[in-house]
Amino acid sequence: MHELDATFAALSDPTRRAILARLSEGEASVMELAEPFAMSQPSISKHLKVLEKAGLISRGRDAQRRPCRLEVKPLTEATEWLERYRKIWEDNFQRLDALLGALKAEKRSNESEQ
Image (cartoon, rainbow, N blue to C red; front, side):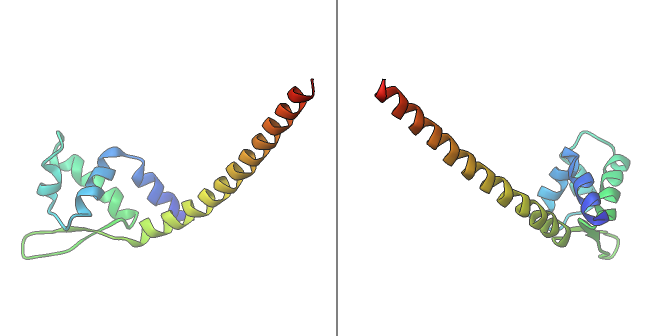
């Protein structure tokens, strides 16, 4: 559960979600990731550390360049966790729809008898 908590905590920030969206297109350097944001490189580095600690990204080494890349496993685990609850809520909504349909039919039946 600790990994899942770290994943959701990392995803709670819109800057980190934007960084992940950019990395979904391919690896990028810190400077490339910082480009679209109005923040300092140290601020971007802090966001990257959170993402790295959560296992959502990894950093490689390519000569002097340290490219960041997206790691799929934590996102897959979060998706699987959410999917279980989506199915539960979908079943609940289907039961609610059936109940509302029965109540409407009962109301129409009572109105037509009067």
